[in-house]
Structure formats: structure tokens, C-alpha cells
Amino acid sequence: MGTGTVTPATEMLSREELRDRLLAVGAGRYHHQHPFHLRMHEGLLSRGQMQAWALNRYYYQSRIPMKDALLLAKSEDPAFRRAWRKRIVDHDGNLDGYGGIEKWIKLAEAAGLSPDEVIPCVGVLPGVRYAVDAYLALVRDSPLLVAVASSLTELFSRDLISLRIDKMRMHYPYMVDGLAYFEGRLTQAPEDAEFALDYVSTHAGNRSQQQQVIGALEQKCAILWAQLDAIDYAYVSPGNIPPGCFVPQCD
Image 1 (tube, one colour):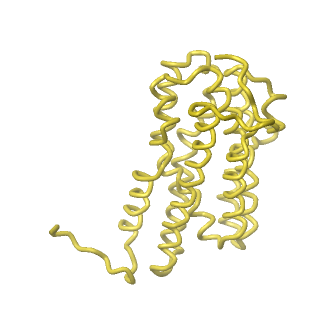
Image 2 (tube, helix red, strand yellow):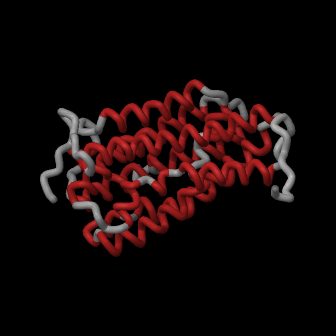
């Protein structure tokens, strides 16, 4: 038996213990381990498969500011709203409109798609659409604490983004001109994650609420995994693309 102490299930976790539990969720459940991402980082995906990923992931990117607007409406604290609305600006852009969504469109263009193919989301897989809509519903229907906790996948995203930038430059040189989205998230994601982590650590006032925080992160990881499951099933193995969805025109 180990010599470490175990916090009883009814006792409050310390801030450090809560952080460790959340990091353990990421180690075990974050989509960095999904077979589709592993293939991507090994350089095994075709250009058509990269197009399918960029197009389908755009649906998620386009809904992030909507998710954050839903979350903002839950808070009566102006200081919180001022801090959180930065996320909407990061994705929608400021006066010029050049934010994360526009940068993702540039990524899709680098893969060989036109904005007219991407922006309407007509070719998005049903499984991706359902997963992303489930994320919006989670934020819409949950208390503020749970909604904030669902964003904590950003705790793990910087390492994945850094790896993705390196692997895309190595294996998919045609994507290099579209990497601005990932480069921006290298600083945005850690800042956002630390704010959210501090918020849930401060506002989870009992063990039950702490478990809700952990559960929200688990649910968000499942949503991200489900998106990649749908993409992998349609475009890798067995390659069963649903009717009306995007069909790559290149190998």
C-alpha cells in the first residue's frame, strides 16, 4: 500500500488537490490521444482528410463565441464579465473582425478549401454537429461554475497546439500559411485556463461542487473525443461519409 494520504470523499479538496484531479482528467481523457490526432502527427493523413478535419472543426470554432456569450449571461459580476468577454474578442476579432474564426478559415484555405465551402457548415458531419451542440447545451443549461469548468480543456491545449504546429510544418507544408490560429492560442489558451482554474478553485465551496467541476471537464473531454470519432469514422476507417456531407476531391 502507498504511504500517501487519501482525501475522504466528503472532505474538501485543497486547491492543489483539485488541480491535480483536473490534470489527471486531461492525462487520461483529453483528445491528444485520439487515433485521428496520432495519425495527423505522424504525417499519415491525406490532404483530403486534413480538409475534412479543418471543415468539420470549423463548426466547433464558430460556436465558441456563442458558448461564451451564453456563459457571460449567467454572471452578475461585471469584473467577471469584463475578463471573460476577452474570449469572444479573441475569436470574433475586434473592429477588423480578424480573430480566431477568421484565422481558422485561413487554415482551411491553406488546406485547399474556399471560405464558401467552410463558412455555411453545410458539409459538417452529423456526429460533429451533435457533439458541438451538446457543448452549447452543457453551458446553457448548467450553473456558471460548471459552465466555466467545461472550458478547462485549455489547461492541456498548449502542449497539443505546440506539437501540432511542429508536425504540420514537418508533414503538411501546404498548411504552413494557415497556422496563425494555433500560434495565437499558444498564449491565449494558458491565460484563459489559469483564469478559469482560479475561478472554479475559489467558487467551488464544497466537495459536491468540486466534483461537478471535475465532471464538467470529463464531459467536455468526451465531447472533443466524440468530434474526432465522427471525423475518423467518416474519413479514415471505415470511411463511411454520411449523405450530404463533405466529400474530399483530392487524396
